[in-house]
Amino acid sequence: MVTTMLRLVADVVVTMDEAGRIFAPGAVDVADGRIVRVGPPDAPGPETVERVGGVLLPGLVDAHCHSPMTLLRGAGEGLPLGRWLTEVMWPREARMTGEDVYWGMTLAAAELLTAGITTSCEMYLWSADLARAAVDAGLRSVVCAPIVVAPGWERFGTWREQADAAVELAEAFADEPLVEVGIGPHSAYAVPPEGLEYAAAVAADHDMLLHLHVAESRDEDAEIRERHGSVPRLLAELGVLDAPRILAAHCVWMDDVDLELWARHRVAVAHCPGSNAKLASGIARIADMLDRGIVVAVATDGPASNDDLGLWEEVRLAPMLARLRALDAETAPDARQALAMATREAARALGRDDLGVLAPGRRADLVRLDLADPTFAPIVEATDVVSHLVWSVGARAVTDVWVEGRRVVAGRRCLTVDVDRARREVDARARRLAEEAS
Image 1: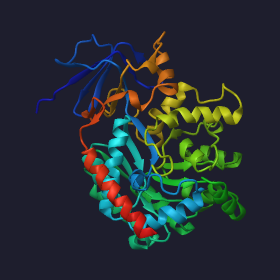
Image 2 (image 1 turned 60 degrees about the horizontal axis):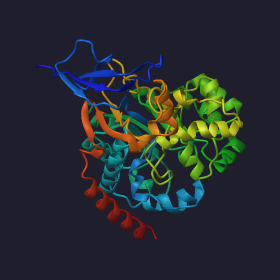
Image 3 (image 1 turned 30 degrees about the vertical axis):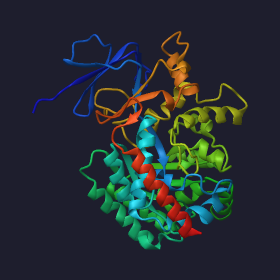
């Protein structure tokens, strides 16, 4: 079999590696879905060369999302987290079918890809349909099969049966390179202690990412803190923190003891500043997390609580809110760290050393942005590109996207999704869910 190697030549290549290397101009060589070389464009290489221009950087990684909630976008406006879940989200989700989730994820995949997000970490019901939609759209996903004990979830069985279903899902998608299956016990308030323990054991036995919500709202924190000290301390008591790979979403209401537990057990954090702000949940202490060596990634959360899946806003909000919390413009993260939280550090949070950096051996997930966009001006030196990517540019400058070396977005158009049909499907299904839940 003859391998075809392609060289993509850009005006600027932002590698997002630890050394912060930027090539201007630069080239990325791709073969069989992997990156073979990154560097200056004039080195000997493949005969097939495409001069794409603009800026190339690694595909963004959304570290925590419930993407099929495009079906619920805009619902429950103005409600705090507890009422938002119990009065609006869960009643409609109780009526969702697998096909509803398929179309909700399909529309979301088009939105994610056109924003330059090539990988999303998902937690949602009907996980097999979610994964199928992501694959059909050419989106890479880490699908954390959920465990929830709540009204409407009885149809998926007991918490133990839901956990066992995660293992079956992993086996079903074992040969699909675009899908990794993890396990997602929703939270300490939606899963009983024994269910959390069992999920951690399953994650350890099958080398799965364990992903859950932690200390998202003040009410959740107060209830559990009164009985167990805090959500992290409860998880430590149960042995959940001994799982090999843990990604905790939100982590807003954390004290110093909690942060030390996270650092000691190498728990990564999916920081959702936009969703936390919209639901008035609070501002996570990400500067303190970074000081302790905790891996922090940014994430959108779902399109019903954000409601934008672009991720660029989160890259900007994370340092803004950290500085506002400290009333100090020098508080971390800076622009370079903020962009890393959507690329290299987000990949680390998922335990994926094949994503998030443009380097030989990594997956060929790339994003091109148009340097002609006025928000890129001026560029006095190459590092200005990174500052502009964080503070002034955004999804509107994304023109082309590759996943596993395959172009899935060209000229700002998603090539893999019939967006008009997906929107019609979501509109009709969203209306039905609202009527049935009323």
